[in-house]
Length: 118
Image 1 (cartoon, rainbow, N blue to C red):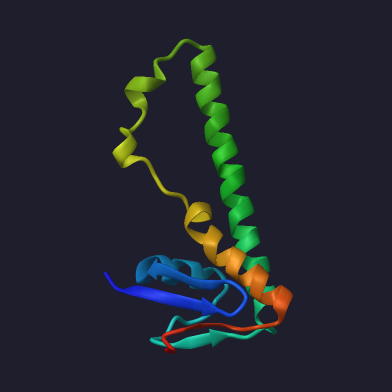
Image 2 (cartoon, rainbow, N blue to C red):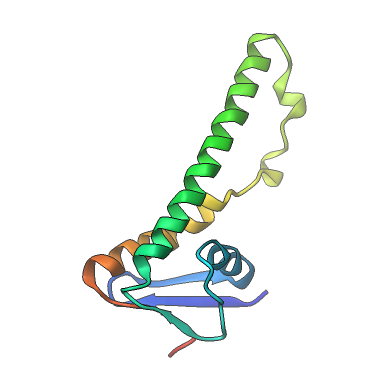
């Protein structure tokens, strides 16, 4: 697994697995090359696309929670159905949060986000 280091003068560095970065970049339709830049002009569109994806996931998770609550009220044993802690899912929202925060800070200070550039 390759690690990518994202840098911004506004937010420092973030280390991310390449697979995670590719998933994030697909959301705002930007290729993830060996090195690259997200300019301050590109950041608003990237943030908007990521926020839409995050909101969709939050709605889905609310639906799952509502189903779990209903099953609990009906007396079903949810502990038998839940995955062990080591197998629980890490959601897109959790993986993307540091990158979203970096984009927000970079936008505020009008600086780019770069990767693969020493």
